Image (cartoon, rainbow, N blue to C red):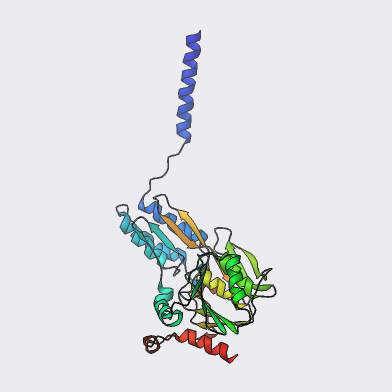
Length: 335
């Protein structure tokens, strides 16, 4: 009897195991076609600027997909996928593999540099600058100059208390964010809060919520004054085309303040916060997945223009002069 029961149990286990295997579907093979389609599909569902840039993503797929073949090696597949993503013309769109990273840099490569840290260090600092956390501070008499090179470097309240304390009885602040490629929007907000005495509506954030190209939720963004030390005197913000991403957000935030003037060149843009996706072959894909509009409804993706356009000339640079800093000094000394 026991033998019969054991036999029946064994048969049942075999049958259950067979059924389980039948129900489990194996993963599809990681072919070039699978990878390419997943890249296109993720961008299709998450990218935020198709309408703004007038991009027909289906048409892009129809042009590139026939070029994908089963025999492609990884480098060929990467290069083709990167070429397709280049159609988005977006510095926040990247494909990352162990051997390369795709990128779009045309947003600044066709513009003048309009910045030289070496020139500032040699002809303005003269080793008299102070470092307040990530901020480089120079006392120019009645005016304070501050360079902030990356919003990826955290500003804490103590740093800003020192800065604001040093601005007492000064005629103005020059805040230089040229060549600041971005970082944390929280740092941009934290800095702006120190320069306003009332709540300011700075724009509207649109965040992707679904696969449709127009599936967004909206969020009105306000900057509240910091509950502590603040400075509401004259401020000149210096920008160039390499002022990108969080720096463009910062520029838009500061644009809402009546005591701020922008001098230099249009910022680089980068008005979309990124979404990330791990591909089955180990590559990483990043695309812009939000958009930001000014209170007037202007999309900041292409950058924010200055109030006063100023460029650095080769002749001035040879003489050790930063024309954009000099323009800012001229404005503050006139006011």
